[in-house]
Image (tube, one colour):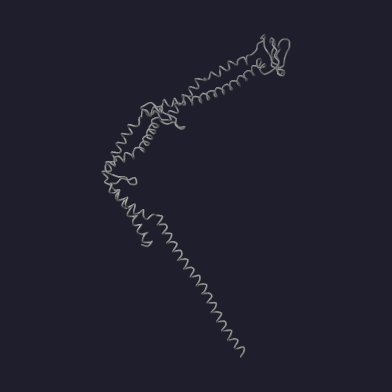
Length: 333
């Protein structure tokens, strides 16, 4: 058998082999459905026995049964934000600013004539204590001597200047309000780490990878993952069990009767004898022979062209010589 015939024969065998598999794979559908039903029933019973939903809920920290949340996530988020804001205001109420101002009342208290006061000099920072005897817009008299406002610190002069006292008090009020807001924000951040997860949990949600999910949905997801894992481990052994009981045998992930399987194995052996590597080698040989034929023909053309050109030149030279000889004869005559 030449190479071409062997290749054709191999192709026919491969076609027959593929067609045989397709034909044999069409086992009686009713019987296969019955077997698959048995497999699925035993798989479901096994999964139910192996997977303890209550135990899984406990591992996740959920109460069992895991119930769906009563409110949507957006509604819960808005509710928790209000709860957190309320808790922050309860811990740091608006009166916090008033309390701080009361604590600072001594800073703005106005001195009266006859009060014993302490003054602080601006440059030396020295303190002097005496009775206030007189005060005006620009100076005060403490003890036997008067002092101009520029000689004294602002903390001293504020006690005899109501306008300056009101200005400093308002400045402190603004500063305390900023501090109050900062304290609330810090407390809210603390609640976000500690209290907020509890609030979401109370409403049926859990934080997974930065997102709030319904506990029921996450529980079902984990339950499905466990089922899929066990199914991947159990399905093939159960398929072997039930198909073998019914007299089937596996061949390349499909089930056939023993007779069908043996026939496929024999066909495969026949095809295996003509391995693809052999086909490729023979195809390379055919290609090589074809190339050699083409090269030989091209070489013949080149040779003919070369020698054909040389012959033409020779004929032209002979014609010229004959013509030259005739001319020479005329000359000598």
